Length: 367
Ligand SMILES: C[S@@+](CC[C@H](N)C(=O)[O-])C[C@H]1O[C@@H](n2cnc3c(N)ncnc32)[C@H](O)[C@@H]1O
Ligand code: SF4
Image (cartoon, rainbow, N blue to C red; front, side, top):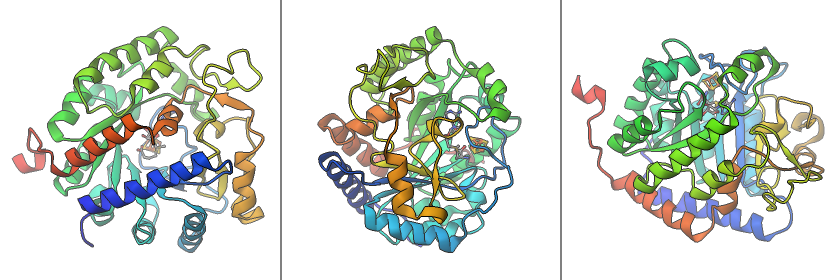
């Protein structure tokens, strides 16, 4: 399979932008972004993981079922498919599924811990973006994500960069890595890659206590985003927008708490949330959720595509939601993705990703 090139980038991003514009201008729901949680299995045990990993699922989707769903979603307007999990590279037919998505000429994001990237380089090279989770240096990353995780992830990052993949780091902010901004930005700068910082969202019951131990206090989260803002003024490597950071800094209730439509703070962010409007999450057994926040609690009871069909399961995830906004600030960036500052940032990032130079060779080139 050939490598993803600059023209693919331009075509896929343009189709995605057009999809979002269409969704924004039409009042009805369009599933422009579909996050496919292809498996619940994982080869890591991150303390905070919001997915119920390694719980035996009743009926995980087959390749044929995923392909059919991809076809149906494409017809409905999906222009970005994200392969997520669990660890998506553990899904037995991940290469075939990714190739099926690639054949649609749409944006493909592969979200991975990186451990198995060397065995799936063909699809990683064709993906528009390979999001790899990195939480900081060896000590902080492993405190968040388990012993020996760092070495395996670093090998994945190196392998992907060396193969010419477009890598983005995804960092979950906790007590153990709140001081890792400079490390991660330098790391990204040296390798000509980018990084997104995400606050913790709720983990399922099994991991709730351990995950809560990692949560920063409200004061510390505010300080973190104030610092991030300062660093972003000097480095273009941070993908979170200033609006995203301001949203976090001024969040009017406790972080983690959802702002409901009938709450006194409902006007804090009056814009409609993109999740459940043009973004959806589809679990490995075919349930459709608006977002990850609605996953591990009794806020939302999903419908399953196998029981009621795609239309009804999507409609169900887009209607009757009582939330107005939450501390998962990604929604701010998705709402602004077609604004001029974002378009300009997108152009600069695309050019840098394709033509920018690394300051240091990756490890495998050194050894
Ligand atoms: C669920 S993972 C699946 C993909 C892959 N296994 C990985 O770790 O990158 C997708 C992303 O969610 C992040 N994540 C996991 N648990 C989280 C939580 N409680 N809050 C915020 N992000 C979380 C991960 O770090 C990763 O960047
Ligand atoms: S965050 Fe990713 S790597 Fe970690 S346990 Fe969850 S699914 Fe696995």
